[in-house]
Length: 418
Image (cartoon, rainbow, N blue to C red; front, side, top):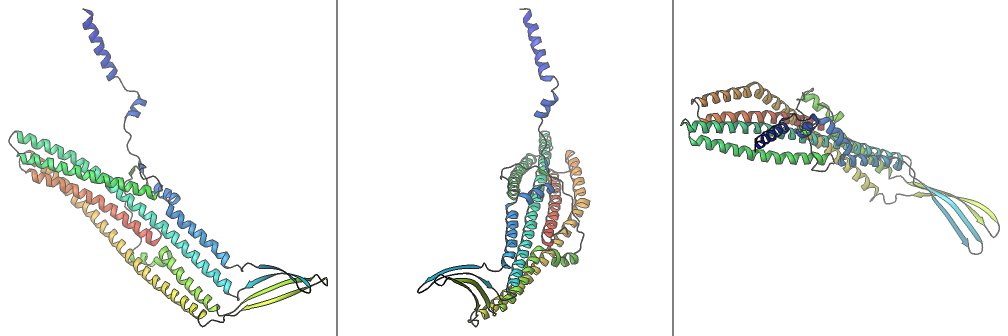
């Protein structure tokens, strides 16, 4: 009986030693949750250019169009002929024939194929720029969603502290129950807003995985902090760059050049093509051999209803390409102007928020906290000051994301950093 208290004390000391002893570093490292990995835009862009199916498809179309050029410049395949005749005499004939287009036709066909290949190349470059711009815009949207969740999550903790303060003041008769209910209502609204943002985060992650050719459910880390990109050229300089570097415009220009070559080829169709055949003849009856040479001419006899309309078709196609070129250029000029305006607007708002609204909102919140604790400010004023600060912070990060998205759209149009 005397040993029982001693055993109890030993068991208690053993339990304290087990639960309070230092945790080994390896175990602590495994148990502690690791912070979410940062994902860099440059790394994602490299993976996108390597794995995106749309970019790969555009690249293969370009390779296919380049393979057409030597085919278009090459003569038609020759034809080998073998025949045997047996009437009064027995003869065996053999030879080869070659179709020869009128001089200049093969060269023009090669030029048309080359212009088409150059157009497909520009379309491939435009596809690369467009898909990269899609990735960048989704990346910046994801950054804004992550930041919004952080800001609203921190404000949820502040609202919970407001609720406790209101409860304490209510218990001593210095606040109304309405203050507590209003704090609880705002907490519920914050939870609903966070749920919406979490859903949007999952959708954006799935969209980025789609572009990277990953499974939609693959995890993504947290985007890196945004560093604002400044424009190095003004509107006039960016507009002037379109003719030299914009793939969409250059692709349409190649269509116009292709139309010019098509008109020249259609006019050449008025001229005849030739066929030259040479071969040998063996007379088995007299056991003698000889040869024959034939020249054929393909006469454009129906030029009035065929070649004439071919020229008209080529001219109409070229004019359509020229009008498309003007339309594309006008659209790109508008998009450049719109992008520059959006960048400048974002820069102005960012400066106003950083230098003016946010410092004022923080000071207002601190003053409201102090005033509410001593009963000089009502709860609604305190709550409004917190929500105003929250919206200003969200607007700042939203404008930063919009700034970079506008720069990405300009880069897509111009073909290089604006």
